[in-house]
Length: 314
Length: 307
Image 1 (cartoon, each protein chain N blue to C red):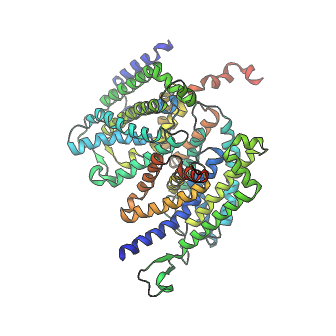
Image 2: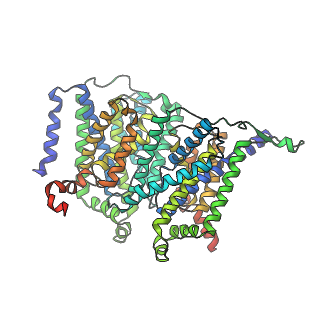
């Protein structure tokens, strides 16, 4: 049963558009799937390889701007952004990886944090190329209806899930986990840690970029404040994974479901809506304190008090 | 001649900015050295101090420079509480992700900046002190001087006070027992433990002192800057860039790093454009990562060992 869970969920999601749901619910589902892709992508790097990134907005925004600039300057469909950003984000990841994955400790976290800011400042200032704060808008949307957007992001999400499963069950995945657990030990076993960390970053960056390119096509408008913010994208990505559970297949998906619904609910509340960042911050702190491995990672521990009440009390 | 004037004026402005940046960087470097944690809420603590100074000025007409004596102890206690009830428990939590504490500080930053927006609105605020536009001119002292340079009074005051606080910290770190324990812990936690240093207490004190430094920086910044809730991010970035330029956890490095960053930023603002000043900040950060990953501390160490 558990083995076929992905298939069942995928099949279930395939028939969702046939149910004639409201446009708003479809929008939420599309966002959930998009955030699962970003979360899964972050999870490769942060969860499995242990390199925490605070700047996934940079990869996301790069993907979105690749699509946007292709449309704006070359006049071709923004959907070409998805294949194009594979190339561009690999290049970006290689550069970032070369600069900061040689170093250990907090350098990578800080460098990615800076990367997000660098991207934002640069896009704001390169007005001729990126339109600066005016942003880029796609004037003719591909579809008015959300069905096809849903199927596209569904296939991207399914592809990401499959790719991660394949990677993590191959040698590569074991290298990643070895690097996370003990870099010195990994190195002494002959694993070129910098190289494999860079590969992990490339995978993660490209997948996030694809989600970004999709976002450009779906939303039809981007500006630096929408795609490069620290809290709304980078930290939300970290939260998606931490809520769900780092280094688990289902963690980012569960996290995306919870975070997107929570964000929508909190923002629509009167008065409290303005304080949604506070609530997110408090949730983040509580998760770190009490469920450090996320809902999926710690679910056995979380269920314990319900299953064995006597054991728990003793 | 005008070019030279502009250059010297930029240099002076950068040097003063650097002195204040050094204060921010010092607090972060101390915490980094002892706790191995980059405090990404550092700038937001500074934002809190600035709001304290702002409200003291607006409501009670207390000079921002005097409010150091109120903001610093307040943030010290606040820092101790955060360290005791949040950071220490998280240190004991077992998890897969290695940077739990850093993520925790990000959560704190989110809470602080958002709460400030909710309570104080997003308005830009400043403390219009009476001496804000006073300045000293070079021609006042040397009338035949070929070039004209000026020193703004609040900038100079802030800079001098920053230097005084930095010297005070240096004396504290080198002469007192607590200071020595802090340096010992930052060099080697296990060895410090074996030498009978109460590491937990040292950690709390260090976090508290970091908060004092950042509170002081906030109070020194408010007469010359403006204040809004999201301001913390910018200064957190300044702090960690300095920490990396200076070498993780090195206090000497942080002072030099602060000065370098201040001068570099003011140069980019003058010669490239105001909008690019933050980009200049990160350019120097990337340069430090590529060419000098150990930071200035590694240069100092090399010089001392004579290798």
